[in-house]
Amino acid sequence: MDSPIEVNKKICDLISKTFDLRVFYIGTSGKIIHESSNNQLINPLYENLKQNLFTQLNFYASKQYDYPLIKKSVFSEKYILISVINNQQFEGTVLIGPSLSYPLSEDRVNGIINDSRAFFYREKVIQYYKSVPIIKHDKLLNISSMAFLMLNHVLLSPETVWERNGEVTEPDEKIGNVDLVVSENLQTSTSHERLFETKMLEIIKEGRVEELKNLPNVKEEEIASVLSKNSFIRSNKNHIITLITLVSRASIEGGLHDEIAFSLHDRFIQQVEEVDTLDETRELAKEVLYTFAVKVQQAKNERYSKTITTCKDYIYKHIYDDISHNDIANKVELSPKYLSVLFKKEVGITVSEYIQRTKIEEAKKLLAFSKTPISEICSLLNFNDQSYFTKVFKKVTGVTPKLYRERHHLLSK
Image (cartoon, rainbow, N blue to C red; front, side):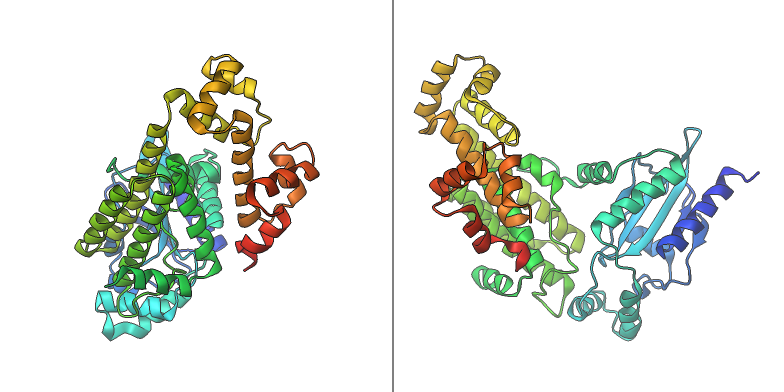
């Protein structure tokens, strides 16, 4: 009968052959116990030293996690790290990768080569990136869940894996010509980028800090438009400048005072020029998003009493339920009549009108960001029938749901 280590070696070989990925089995001391390669190339930028890869990933062989950890190298490669536990003993780590979410463009690869000063083996680097498997985000999560189950006999859903990775990538509690960079980025953006940016800006505008966990903090570098052909880091810095400008504008629309938004904008622009590595630019992007979202959330909360803020949060969290005025009154332990007076005084409209408007805002997102049929959107948001939904939608937006989708649907562009 095979020992646990031999079984794990066979599992590594199976994962490697199934997904055409290189797999390392590394002991707690950092020694490579087993390697399954399928003759895949090693990134020349690591100078054929596997330890250089570990360093770039900030990988420590003695550190363990109770979920699959997905890490991205400074060269845009993605790796899955799985701690192997046997009889409650930490035996080592299985490292699966590399993969890319999208093919890297020639300009992107040239930028990486220039940053690394790898001019003498340019062709090898180009060939390497052409050989790296392309695995989309959702599939990578599925692979990580399956590998974790095979190695540890614990089933974690892909959604749980993504959520747990979000916990470790959240920042600590830190609360050229910019307009030209923004203009160039908007002109060259793909539909994927525009969709991502629109979703992200909606979250910032509404101050929904908790939703940032479910949204990648920065768009995939592999498909982001190239804003510097000479340097990968410079291109990413320019994207962060664009991000700062767009997010500061969205925060003002969300209710943040102009002076606060402009002050944060200027501070973050200065910080962009102070960072030197790709990891630092990624961390800065996360800090930008969380800081602006928190500030907008605070501004919105300060505008209303605690009771009204609780009402608004309850409505938002139950947007897909059939909520009523009485449900909300019960939540804040007030009589429906008194709540009506208080809500109208602070918000300017009735509770029922606010529920309708919030549901219509959600409908606008579904119409713009998804291909869900209008009839299904109507049902999801608990409108009595499609005719009534259309009537309310037109009253709030000035156009029918169908016309709104035709004008704003990003997925078809």
